[in-house]
Figure 1: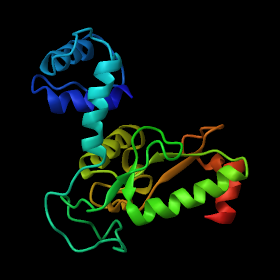
Figure 2 (figure 1 turned 180 degrees about the horizontal axis):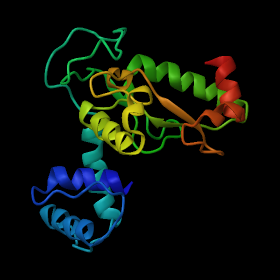
Figure 3 (figure 1 turned 90 degrees about the vertical axis):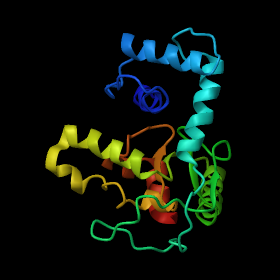
Figure 4 (figure 1 turned 135 degrees about the vertical axis):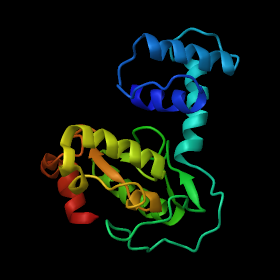
Length: 204
């Protein structure tokens, strides 16, 4: 959450860039105060309710953007390591599914994918399972931010763990990452041993 806050503050306040540390220290607090002043919010230096509402408004534009350019329908485009999407491609029919199912933050998907996902998760819910959607559509800028974070930890192995910007199915708006609400496995392999993981293996 703090890394995302730092990412937004860097985009909104054009002063010295904050390193994306994930640590809420004095520099992040000072930049947050600048952000609050910019939007006529009380400069508390903390993410209070009004500040959170403004951040969510900005996050929504980042996570559910409106396309600025017309492209063909890439719904079934075979994006891969060797077959990238245009970096400025944004699907034309993204919808916000936050509040319709369990999500970790704001999640958007193309409508057809969202409708199918909601139907599947409703079936799981009826069977007493809680599956949480932890990511959906991602802009290439956010994909690149994630890739660089992974690279700092895994080095060259990163290419086999997460896609580079422009090479991710998340940019199509048709892919999601799922987790168990109860276990929160962090997208690790042992998710397959949870009740939610077993159900998805059989039903997805």
